[in-house]
Length: 115
Length: 110
Image: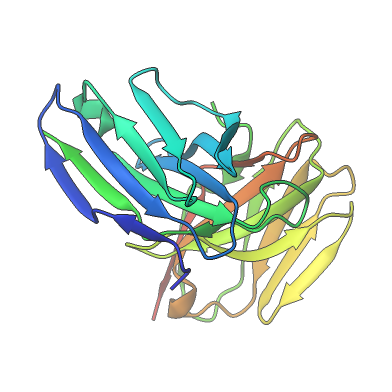
């Protein structure tokens, strides 16, 4: 158990819909990361927040958005869903969010299926 | 497009064999990490290497960072079924943002 929690574990929805994925970081961690993992694309970095502010942005689509709240939990919003958005979505957290020894602790993931 | 290229993509071996997987890039990294991911779970950090030429050992696993800090290898001695999983490397750029490779999926058959 990494200490990072994600809900829901599984999510099945239809094309065109909107969903929200939730992540609670480890106690004391200030950074939260979101990743998308599909079979053919590996682990793709989407976005990182540090203490409520966006710190880095990766390959995140305009249909996707995220935020980190004052209690440091984070939500990833996916809208106008397409079949290709079906994937595992991981949240990770770390104490700071940068530096050579920055260790990311991953949650168990949310499996999103878009039908 | 992956900044980090991992090879091989898939590897299936018998218990007791040795293996090496590679992580290559044209970019220089300030540090490189290896993670292992088991089915249904998130990746777990195995090691961080920082210095060019650095070698770190973790039981039967040996990690090496290339002299130019552009590549890394992971060698497993006498592989066991418990080593089965997806091995991911992640490199930190100058701004220390980590980016992951696509991984090597290892299967060790008993």
